Length: 216
Image 1 (cartoon, rainbow, N blue to C red):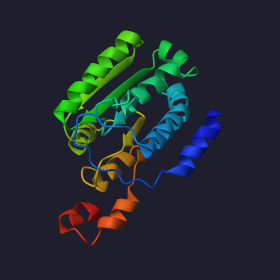
Image 2: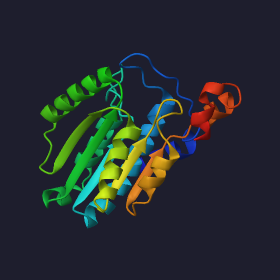
Image 3: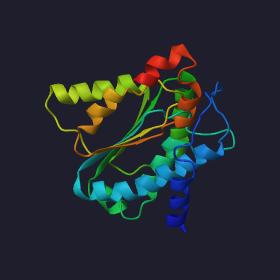
């Protein structure tokens, strides 16, 4: 049944997304976002045991983390990623054996950062994190945050730990392809991007202000 759900999510609304920018701290979960979250969980369920079996540390980066919760009480992507690690029966033995899992939740809006931090505290009260699982909530832009990490690694000639990056922005800015290229140069990095082609088709050539980020 789970494999069927993953299959339906993949063929459903993966690339037919045109997110409207929410103004409130929390907003309601719409069907296409729920589909993206099913894809995220299925992807992590497959990626985690592979990388966790052969490496001492893995990174999970949520580039546009949001507040972690929707108005209807549904989990946001940070909690979905956390549950994927804690509930995976094949990964638990690797965590117990010393696997280090580091989450980086990046969110630009301070009000959503505050709510996300509260949600993570409540999550840890209900489900204590095992030793070796670490959470970082970063207030700021995804491109700036990831750029600093990559620059630090490059300048010290260090290899990046196996990394999964979930990039699901509102709108078109903040995800320069040159940054994704730098991340993709790491041999064990994977990126799941929400690419909103319907909005590009709708706005390209009609709104000069967004031509530059569209070209980028």
